[in-house]
Length: 128
Image (spheres, rainbow, N blue to C red):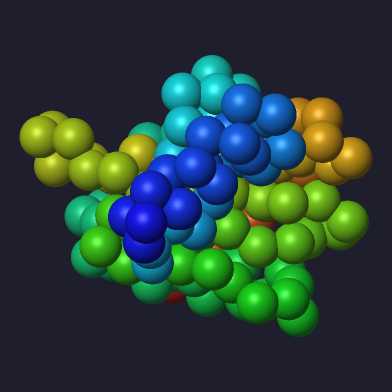
């Protein structure tokens, strides 16, 4: 029963489209819907540099709790009345991809996604 409850909750919320990502058993699940609606950029730094910078940027944009999954480099929080999810991924190219998706009132909000992405990238560049 313990193992099926989180899966059932994930299925329930995922099917309803209510959340971009859900914390399940300590992890943030990034869905295909998230990937289709996310703003994306690639930076020349490695994930071990980008991930702490992303978390720092998010903490500067909100007083809300940041739900983070350090193992999968994913986080979500509330910013400007929206739910923002960030996923950091390093393909085999040596670069790092940052993806941001935001929802306001259960609808994807490209403006908020782009604003968060711009701030993350600007703060990453300023840290060099």
